[in-house]
Length: 309
Image (cartoon, rainbow, N blue to C red; front, side, top):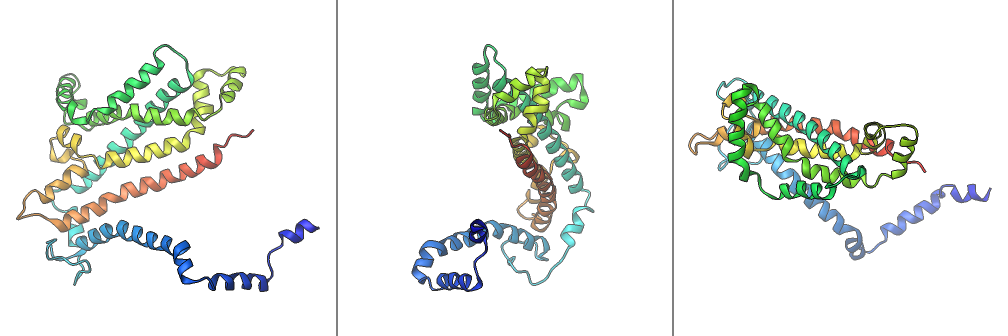
């Protein structure tokens, strides 16, 4: 009975006295303990939203010039959005589909192969395990442009045998993206798998489970939060990747969105800033949609992947 009374909510008079005590806090103390947090929050929101607001303003501004454009335009027009899908010189819709396709496929393959490699380094015991993991990390130290010549020659040689997967194709770009980040992602996933108790693997082995079954039914469901985060980061990075896509893709119809946006500002005298801003807004939608879908997986993995003792 005493427990129930202690857990009962405060009377209105007591709650009112608490709120009154908070209101009587001196301004200097409030600013020192609480107010600075609001200042930092407002500054962070302003810094984050200002570029987005400027891009939206440039996309609907009838003046196609950034030097004379205003943050709040005098008029609003949607001609820049209509031109995106009517101008044959700038197939933005094709670029967005290409970027989304390449990002989804490459990120999925990257997460799948990295999780398999992480399971091997985390759970299996074999000779050269430590040296293999260090070798994968060492490869990630070198920048991408050091391998441009090798990637170019390799793409040409593959194209002579399988033209659909050679240089200048989306499939070859997916292969390059997939192999380029496996080492680092495998290291991240391995760190997450190391936190999963080994007793779960031993229990599964007693029940007659193979290493593949342990990976698929025990370890993989518990690592879903890490896999979702790595998938999001990989997709966002590949969707906005420019250097490799510019070097390996030559046809305008095969461009990704990040490469195709350069065509709007190639000339200083005919730069189309309004269409560039509109294309950036339209191209951001796949990233937002994919992030929202994967965010549900993160929340589901955190709530369903708990280990019960």
